[in-house]
Amino acid sequence: MEYKLITYAKEASAATPEEKNIAVITLNRPEVLNALNMEILKELDSVFEEIRKDDEVRAVVIMGAGRAFSSGADIAGPTGEEEIRERLDFGQKLYDKIEEFDKPVVAAIHNYCLAGGLELALACDIRIAADDARFGLVETNIGLLPAWGGVMRLPRTVGKTYAYEMILTAQRIDAQEAYRIGLVNKVVPRDELKSAAMQMAGILATKAPIPIKLAKKIMAKAFEIPMKEGNKLMIEGGMTCATSEDIIEGVSAMFEKRTPKFKGK
Image 1 (spheres, rainbow, N blue to C red):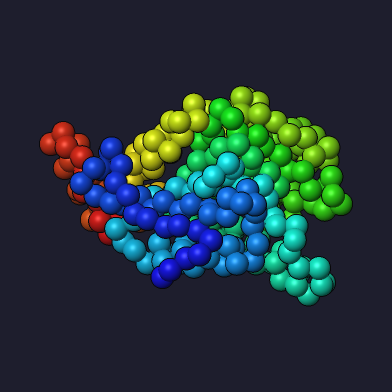
Image 2: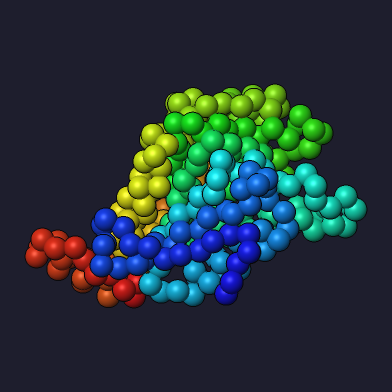
């Protein structure tokens, strides 16, 4: 499929240089700092469906073209009530899809990562920030709230204390503060951002797909269910892994001191 507002390519990583198993998605509206309108949201939805069906892809990287990761939702968007509700609903479902995606997703963030752009990053599993990154859920400045999941995901990521301050005051923070409060996993120099994200994606791509998928599903429920229910899910997941073909490959590779070739079966 051809895309107009994003670019999509499959690339190899240092961990598996012989395989193009990393899906690299780039938001490509640099003239508006990769502001998110319905068209780009729909392209993101389509590309994730394409990636879901591609068994070669083991991890995903999302980044932004030009001067920013994303400045947020395009404020030149719809003004009618039905259109606004449609965009809010579509954005929520898309970000839920990314959070629940079977394959791990890494956000590579530089410069502005604001509002809906930060909500997109929060839906990813791991966030790598350039040292010039700036973060904020700034919607209250213009009379809105972070409705694409930010009001829920930010407290789960950084805790209630920091989330309340960031959301209610529309505070912006730099990359080092984002790292300090646990919003991002790592901060790297700007010129090393993509290589750091690809390195992380490459590591993820070498892991067994079945436990990656199951661990993501269980962790997504970690703040919602009691430990007893979580234990049951972990037993079920552990049994699924222990009876898979990949466990045989994984153990064999360990004893043979080689990188395993998992098939997700």
